[in-house]
Length: 149
Image (cartoon, rainbow, N blue to C red):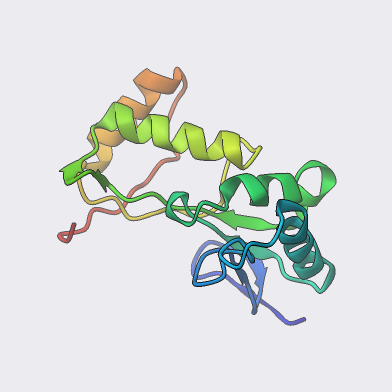
């Protein structure tokens, strides 16, 4: 497996990542068991994959969390994402925080290494809300604001 630096992050990742969505959703769409889907993730790691991408919308965060539990978590750069809208309306800052916390719980981790573009909050407002809601400094949160929803 070859490895490259991910953008300007300084993170070294495999040139091939594991996308956990798409038509297959780790085999879940075809009716495969959770154990089989976990085996897919673990086999990708065995082959040298170090970038794993999932999302709330894929419904695979729990499977990825189980596959990466324990020592395997430190092997990967984990990416997840969540849209800024639900049921036709923008999520509030507290709802976004709850969504992030829910994803982290499903992924059995306290961090991901990549960021999702947010389209509904200013960076300063989101940092303040995150700090107030999670009770610690959110100075490392640097969302990029997009003009698109």
